[in-house]
Length: 114
Image (cartoon, rainbow, N blue to C red):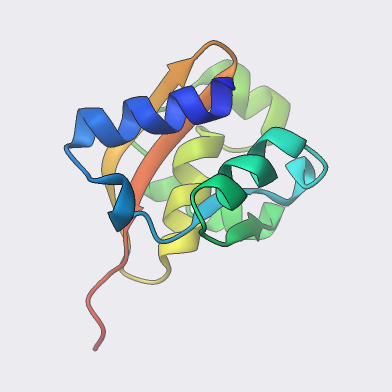
């Protein structure tokens, strides 16, 4: 429920319609969390599980830099790194991390194809 609330809050804050959501991305380490998979199923979008190395590769592009999260996960913002990694090369953040309880969500948009 908190995952869906975080997603809804992020979409609303960014002014993005729910129908514009293409994927839900999460770190591969959270593959077993039912709430994340349920959110993807409820919105009829694929769940993209992002490897630790891809999260780390996206670290330089984050806006949020949490020392606590960095110590725990090795990246400054798990939500932002996952969104950026799923957006692919040239992707950019549309909305920095928002939190609803323990759930966080960030939105990214894919880069223009070359």
